Amino acid sequence: MRLDVPRLEKEIGIEVYITDTDGIDGRMRKRVSDFVVEELLPNKQNVRALINNPPKGNTGNFTHFIIKKVNWATIEAIKAIARRLKVSYKRFSYAGIKDKRAIAFQRLSIWKVFPKDLESRPVKNIEVLAAWRERLPVKIGELWGNRFKIKVRNVSEGANSLITKTKEQLDCFGGFPNFFGHQRFGVHRPITHIIGKYMIQGDYENAIKEFLSKVFPLEGEDAKIARNTLAETWNYNKVIHLFPDRLKTEKRIINYLITHKDDFKGAFEALPSSIQKIFIHGYQSFIFNKSLSYRIKKKMFSVMPGDVLLQTNEYGIPIKYPYVATEKNIEKVTEAVKKGRLVLAGPVIGYKSIIPENTWGDYIKSVLKKESITKERFKEIEFREIDARGTYRPLFLPVEWENIEKIKEDEEIVYKFTFSLQRAAYATIVMREFMKTEATAYV
Image 1 (cartoon, rainbow, N blue to C red):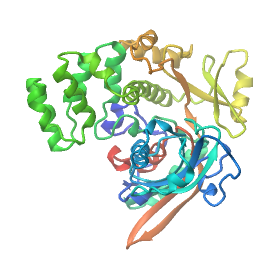
Image 2 (tube, rainbow, N blue to C red):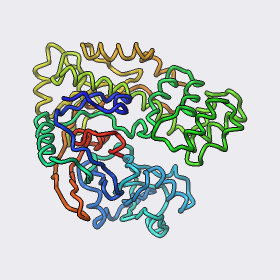
Image 3 (cartoon, rainbow, N blue to C red):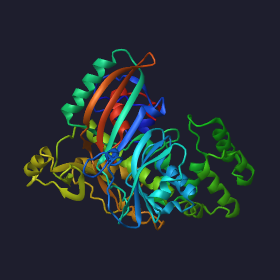
Image 4 (cartoon, helix red, strand yellow):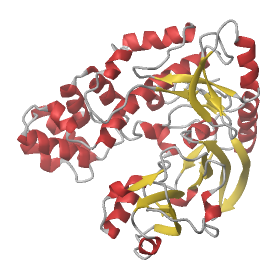
């Protein structure tokens, strides 16, 4: 275990490495092709297996299709395809979000568009590899996980030995801490959890002002100037032209406040529900990360009475039915965890979450008290489409390794990591145990 984590990680609740090795430093995603992700279906089949053998003979109103996207975020890719087809992006659905700076293969579905129409209207850097008809759409979470092929460049001396030792420690532990990754909060501007906290408290004025004006070191200079100028004057008419076009959400809020003076709650209500959820989920993720960090630092690796566990299906995926450990069943539960039938979990806080009745749960309650947040506040969130009842997330997950290779590309030594993770797990969280460097190196 090591506690010397970068400041940016501490700010999002990640306060510890579970391994004690030195890092190899380096950088991921120096090139877009350095990060490849392939979606794995619920039965663990790779979606690429469907390219040459798609389901046949099906009918229905939905077209399922496999795409290869290069340097496109999933939602932006969907919107680009929708524009090309001249249909609403709301017709689309997906199993999971994939990173932008990557080559990604994933399954999508669209309502009432024929496969031939989809395939005949290409979008740059988005390739439709297969398409077929189905009765039902693809649903969120309808996947086992993802297979990753990640290249790390510019590593330090002695990387070979460090990688071997780090992998041995992770294998001995049985996996990695299932933190929410840097992308959840914003790497260049880790602010989603801060805004989420204000929203949960019902303090929309501070939420808006913090979002618009707080400056972070890694932002572009034009954004810094715009935010600082706004903080000095709060004159929305005079500063809106300073905000670069890429800051679409900020400009949307400012335009609303120009015509609806001081209606800060209304400014949030005017945002798409997908953006509203990012803030709430960011805060829930912060509390989870901070709680998991504490558990690791206190070496609470075994099941304790009061802990929450989740049953798993035949493929090892947790099922969302919480099971509470007690003094009476602790031996039985511990054995079930060893056999993979149960997995130790923690609350992603919401108004229905079970907070463990033990020393770890006491810590979680103390964090919420210090934050001036109660579970009940999540029920009082005033946006219709935000469901903040809470859920549960495995504390630790296994890594399904394929290989780690040392290769040479253009006279450069590169390490290529190939492994698979269950859905909702972050490859960057695995890689940080090896690299132990600044968060910006992972994205």
